[in-house]
Image 1 (cartoon, rainbow, N blue to C red):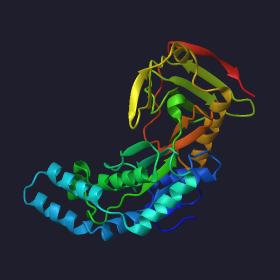
Image 2 (image 1 turned 180 degrees about the horizontal axis):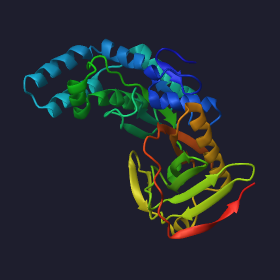
Image 3 (image 1 turned 30 degrees about the horizontal axis):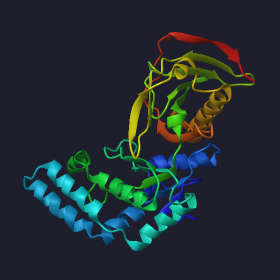
Image 4 (image 1 turned 60 degrees about the vertical axis):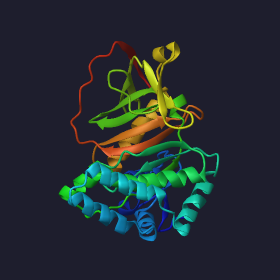
Amino acid sequence: MNSARVVWLHGAADPQQVGVKSARLAELADEGIRVPEGFAVTAAAYQEFVREARLGPVIAQELRRYRAGRDLVVVAAAIRTAFREASWPAEVADEILKAYEELGGDGTEVAVRCSPLGPHNAEQGEVFLHLRSGAAVLAACRRCFASLFSAVAVGNRELNGPDHLAAVMPVAVQRIVRADVGGSGTARGESTFVRIRAAWGLGEPPAGDADQYSVHLGPRPLIVKHRGAKKTKTVYADPHGTRTLPTTPQERSGLVLTDDDIKELAQWSVTADRHFKRPMKLEWAKDGCSGDLYLVEVNRRVMPAVTIDAPAHPVPARRLG
């Protein structure tokens, strides 16, 4: 059940409370696109944390020191330390832990990510992967809150606003997609076709190394496949983080996606463009355990389409369906 502090990522969601990234995923989940199950810790929860932990005076004091000449990096680090050492308000922590219990509780792997209000915030990059306990989720949420006071973010607000105490940081908590034993990539619509990029493992694949697919949808969809080199892949490290490994000969010689995968991603791209009424770039992941595809991020596509150079390993076009 949704509250002022926790909102599940399905259906209409206020981007001013859950952040742009989470709101877009929730909307497309309501359109029938598969999104990793999860919830957002809201802007209201962030504000309650700051208020109850009395972090406002700490922030104001450190900013006065910065304006008096103290190094920005030192000031920003002091504020982030205060966030990480602050105690959770009991009711906020309780709602987050209850939501995590609904996902499965301790032992259930989740990812915790910043979900800023704007699509291009300097503080948008914090991601904590394959966490397996309520305590770890709370710690990661607190670090996402603290990322609002990176040196870059503080410097930007000093120059351009908004006021530091008016800034907020929602957080997304979602089940892990095991793309480290599957694959990941992007999809985007371009006029009459959809272009998909795919590679083994985690993350957005580089253009020159990935499989590339061009899909023309219709009663008899047509797909053109180009096999990429796929020389390396990024996987989860133990206990946290990621590492890069060489791919196997079978992975290098094979294609990441099946025909059904390609058709499903192409339809997701069409649905997203129609829903948001503009071209969108989708980031997806394929769970290597279940074989299911998941939408993990949606961004507006503002750059013009780039023509892909002819790859080294073309695969003949074939009709689907």
